[in-house]
Image 1: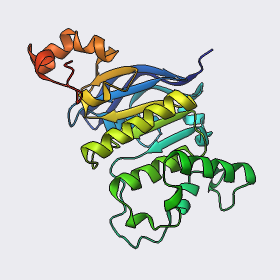
Image 2 (image 1 turned 45 degrees about the vertical axis):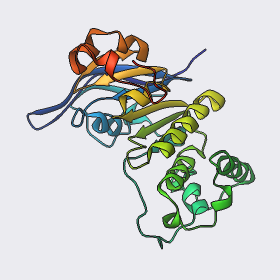
Image 3 (image 1 turned 180 degrees about the vertical axis):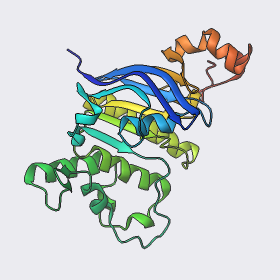
Length: 254
């Protein structure tokens, strides 16, 4: 029986008199993989920050694992990979392993010590991310793709039920981007981790996500990518010939 992990109902977020998001409603259950796409300025990052309690909601409700956001404190069950987090300084004083260990959250924040079970989880996630041989390297000495794998490992090491990813492939080259999408799909398929991935990369995420939300300050479309391709909303936003002219990287059109 699927468990409800996140419910958003009639969310409205405004800064002063300016509406950032309005009438946002959707839900995520165990096993879901939801891609949220939209143009720059559509409110995608504001939405994901609101889910984490980092942005105040003007009206509406958010529930995590059945609890109102204001009462929720089981944060080890929520993984988060924020936007554009990089370590440009090659001498940033933390190794890959130290960064990943920060994903173990206790009542007072990241744990200083981990137990035997958590040590095993650490080994498993380093191996799954393909960075076990990099564990003692400084995070700043890694490539952008390797850094992203380490940060994803940090978000996953506590075995969260729900993983939130905010524009995780923006700084990655096309090949590394495809590798990253493949890893996230594997996590969803093999571990059952529910995914919410926010991106402007409409056509690539359509190949991986089970559900697809097109956002432009409000929910324009919510369904499968195939349904989006056939929808009046896609024609309205991208033009009547878009389904013939916009291609996936494999060469299949929308």
